[in-house]
Image (cartoon, rainbow, N blue to C red; front, side):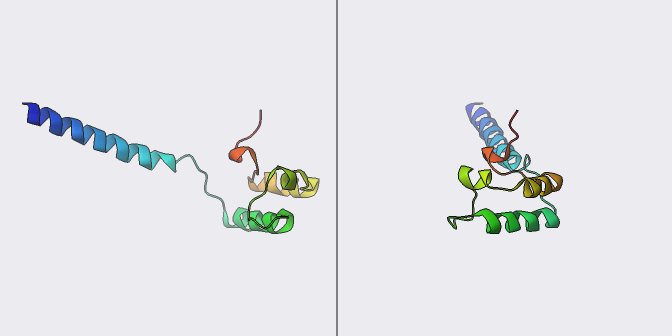
Length: 85
């Protein structure tokens, strides 16, 4: 009886871990090819230190026109990709 309980508990834990790992990528929205290209363009244009990421200072320098383009494409930089409310 103990063996059956241990096996059942082991299967439950393994299933839970598998489902949890699968859910981690589910919240991310896939970017369209156009949005991916725009993202690369914005990083190339505004990445002053060459680390292929935009920090707060670099984000602050993005022009209004480029911010509008990014918003239309569904892109956001900074705040971990989350909208500020």
